[in-house]
Image 1: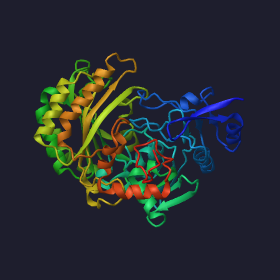
Image 2 (image 1 turned 45 degrees about the vertical axis):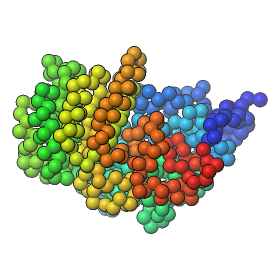
Image 3 (image 1 turned 180 degrees about the vertical axis):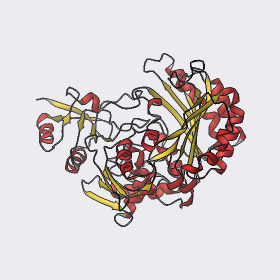
Image 4 (image 1 turned 45 degrees about the horizontal axis):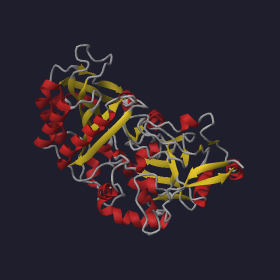
Amino acid sequence: MTRTTIATREGTTTRLPEETVEAFRRDLRGPLLSPADTGFEEATRLWNGMIEKQPALVVQPTGTADVVTAVNFAHDHDLLLSVKGGGHNIGGTALADGGLTIDMSRLRGVLVDPEARTVTAQAGCLLGDVDRETQLHGLATPLGFISETGLAGLTLGGGFGYLTRRFGWAVDNLLEVEIVTADGRVRRASREDHEELFWAVRGAGHNFGVVTSFTFQLHEIGPTVYGGLIAWPAERSDEVLETYRRLTTSAPRELTAFLILMRAPPAPFVPAEAQGKRIVAMTVCYSGDLADVEEVLAPIRSLDDPVVDLLQEQPYTRLQSSLDATEPKGMHYYWKTEFATELTDDLLSTLDELSTECPIPMAQLVVIHLGGALNERDESDGAVGNRDVRFVYGAAGMWEPDEPQAEQFRQWVRDAWKRIRPFSTGSTYINFQTGEESDERIQVTYGDNHDRLVEVKTAYDPDNVFRSNRNVRPTETHVS
């Protein structure tokens, strides 16, 4: 008799009889794929090519009923289960190695209510799907800044982007979710219904079920904003870094500026003589009154003679996808990041030194500008916490899959992290954590919210069915 070998939650394997798998297949409307099937490779392809995982089975739901069927099957057979939205997580949490993966990519519907200023999007959507539909009405919600990122993964970890300074974390704008919990029940969670579950979903949602749809509050944005990339030779880093610090201290919330220290890519917009040389760059989004652009960007414009200047009026959707080419799918990525409340002299000088020393041709030392609206809420307003954060910073390594110095590059990123970690709040963005980071790192990230998360986890997922993530464990001692 043919059997499918598949991983269990306890770290062993079981062999499912073919009639069991076929009965599961018949209960689904969407495809059930195994490694020999057409479409399996695409369904299990992740953005981070460094991740080497292969599920035994992949379900591609066509609706919530398929998700319920898959969750019940995994629960009844004690199978290792994961959920794949966009597959853009740095740690590769979308795939259950040897287990069952629910690939949400067929669920990409978006419904905008321009009068209520809300959008409901299915969990297989990419950020670009949502931006494209909401911008038809001149509306947007804070999402990320790579349009090919999955909506679900970004949101369930908190979520931030160019609009965060104005409107908070992505989950600060989340109104409701439809979620299939470990018991196979479909719940609609909001601030009024299943309040504790909704609180937990807003920042640690990967742990509590399969969210099938999200409803967000929208805000008037664009459709034209001002922004893009501007860069100067690394020899001018001292004045650029000081200008960046002054800018981010006093910038209006409509302005967000990210700092990037890197080698100039061999791109058409980079002069030939600058390609491959070290630069210090900013990527900018100003979403306020375009009549005020000159005044708001005056500190940046005071840094004359840039080597690259792509700042211009452009559609918000174009700006939201303008960095996509800097993170191509299939490259190997290895990051170490932290949260910070301020940019001290020592932090900036350390980042500058690391950039000069960096042996990885396509690496970046980055500072992401946050603060603003997210600082105004209480620490307990959503599991995401971290209400003191004003910056994300870190070392982001990227190299080709066949890079012979890959291990040396990973070690350099680790060593760089040791040098920049002393400037941290002690916490970091959960979606930027790699799979090798400890449980303590997770607990520190959620801080005072962690104990409450454990209580909610124990109530809704006592068997830790949803563990292929940055895992909050339930209290039962038998759960591994």
